[in-house]
Amino acid sequence: MDSDSSPKRLIVVGDRVLVSPEEGEERTRVGLYLPQTAVDALAVQGGRIVATGPGTPLAEPASLDDEPWKIHAREGARYVPVQARVGDYALFFRKAAVEITFEHKKYLVVPQAAILVLVRAKDELDEPDEP
Image 1 (cartoon, rainbow, N blue to C red):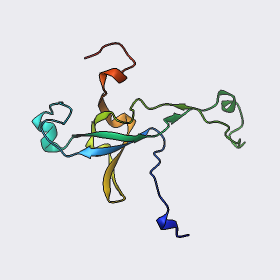
Image 2 (cartoon, helix red, strand yellow):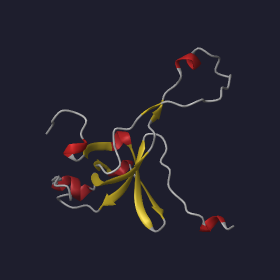
Image 3 (tube, one colour):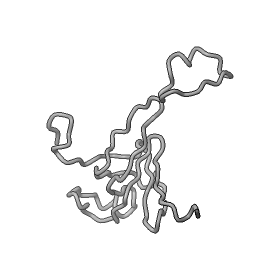
Image 4 (cartoon, rainbow, N blue to C red):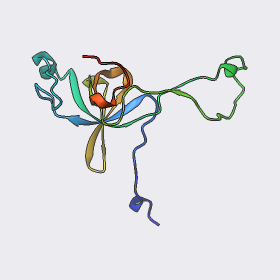
């Protein structure tokens, strides 16, 4: 069977998120107003998160005492999860994003550290009411 005919999917790794970008405008679709300096310089951009990575890997406490040349098989790696969720709207630093095209659609891969704010539906919030 031809490998190109099989369905493919993107798997996001580490503490990165996959964003379907929104073209730069003064006001985003979710109602955030961007200052003209940000729009002009393309310093920030927004988009909807379509996938997230597992997060930042944690070192096992026992492995910190081992000799560095010993190699252990990782059993059930643990991660600090990313804060972003699929469906969130993210506003992020444009310069930190990497543009990719997958199956004729443009996406941005953004590290969690480059995300400035997330907009999430109020019914999905885990925290008490915030602005």
